[in-house]
Length: 283
Length: 283
Image (cartoon, rainbow over all chains, first blue to last red; front, side):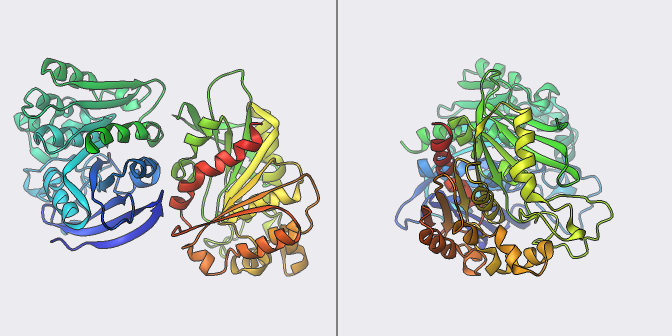
């Protein structure tokens, strides 16, 4: 069982917001994750909602800026917020790292490029972290869902689409919906996966939704109309919507008038997202 | 009328969270303040709730970490969050500044020491900023209240006690309740006011409550039981409670089991505080 080290613990909304570090096998480095435990009652077990953050973030942005704990406490759900990439890899040349590639930008793929062999965020999120959480906290192991923001919205969509039945529900705030066709996706997939664009499609929600074959899955996407990255064609939600409709995968798309890409947008609709997941997790 | 420069604007919970800068006459420097406007309806006027932050904070901590906008939107209240000190004063020797003195630590007093002549946060908060806000935003000028955290809890209490009738209500999270008798207060009052301890009493809530003479005023204090600064005798709420009882000033004191000094504590009870102020502001 993975050794966990408690970094911090704060009472909030009757539960505890904690941060732990552990040694990740997939990423071969020490990783932090935040976890909200909805009460200190020793005998209860809770469903788990995973939240994947966007570019430049770590495990704390969601914890400090979204106000999610109010809603997780109300619905009695554990919420886990991992970091967005491996960190502090020894002897790694980071001269090509930037806000949108490298540390803080793991893009939730398993790199096939030798230099980035530590960058295996896809397997870390969809496998290793689930095991660590289930082994150390009072979880209902068959009740988990996933959501995220921007790069993390992409991550949550591909984790759900690539693992039919693993998650009860999936939602995303302003996800990078079709990374093979946007600048951020091109940069990261080239870097982590190399030049063969066919291999990129295994990590693209718009490509994956057409191949989905599993228990019924609904996709819930939230998008601000004044999101600068929507306007810059980094997010491309309409490509995902078209592909989902074609594949007859139900998709809920809410375009929020006047909202941008920030945590002010996320905070506004956080309650609605957690209530949405609670319907699947608490039944 | 003061010239305002808009620094940022983000839609949240149906309203707008904005940050402005302006040139302060009291502080002789450029100051930022954050303001939440509960809707973009052009014809409405709203009451105003001022929030004073604690040591090391600026105008953004409350904006990003407390989740207050949800409740301000619900109750249709403008919330103003000023910075905690003047900043970037030219030719000022800052070698004695630390996390608990100087920039980020104005302590809401008007300094009488020549070196700190810019440090006039008391007059800035209780006079200049009110005028700036009323001149530039759709406010109900006779409907304002004040609250704050830690150093800002101290600030909110003294602003209300020194200006009978100016604020409809006052509350505080973990306030420095008796600064003349705690290390933080001693350090700041010595620095900004000099060695004459009689002059310190003009900025001490426990001293002021006994002299309060004005319209009925109730004090609402919220305190976490696991607050490290409570244990270190920086906050001394019992001194304020005793003095308020002696002076027959009603005081509500809520000791919250297990909560600490952080924004996780503030976020948990923010809804209750805004609902409390709304009773006075929206009647």
